[in-house]
Length: 186
Image (tube, rainbow, N blue to C red):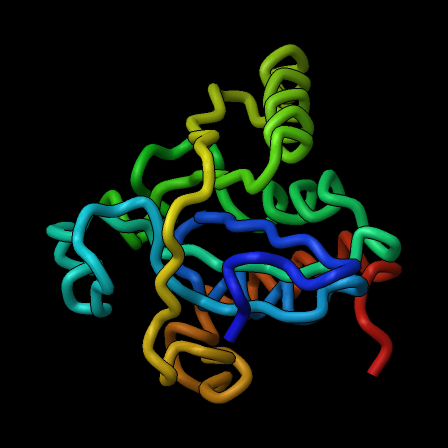
C-alpha cells in the first residue's frame, strides 16, 4: 500500500474518475509511476468499506493514489492521462456507473499541484476541449483509505471478467493508442 506522504524523490496524485479499477489499470502501465493503490477519499465515514462507498452513504469517491517519480513524469502528464481515460463532463457518473462515488475530482497534495491542475482546467474551459463544461472538482487531499485487498490490481487479476472486458479494457486500449510512448517497458 502507498503511504499518504510520498517518499523522497516521489510525489502522490490522488484522482477520482469513476471506477477505480479503470484508473488503476491505466496508471499501473504508465512510465514514471512507481505504485498505484485503489481506495476511497473525500467522505465523512471513517475507514469505509466498499459496500458503504457504493451505497453513497459514506460520501467517499472511488480514487486511486498514484505514486510517481517527478524526474520521469510530470504531474501535468499524470493529469493529461487522467482526462483522457474518463469523462470529466458528467456529474457523478462514468458510463453506467452512477452515484457520487463515481465523481470526477483531483485531490491536490501541494500548492504546486493545485496550481497545475487549476491551470489545466482553465485551459480546457477556454478551449472547450470536451465540448461541454468540465465538472471535475479540485480539492485538497484529505484522508485516503485503501480499498479492500481484492480491489487492488483488479484488472490484472480479473481481466476476463465481463466488467473488465467491457469497461476497463477499452480505457486501457485508448491509453495504449494515445500514450504508446509513455507505457512502461515490460
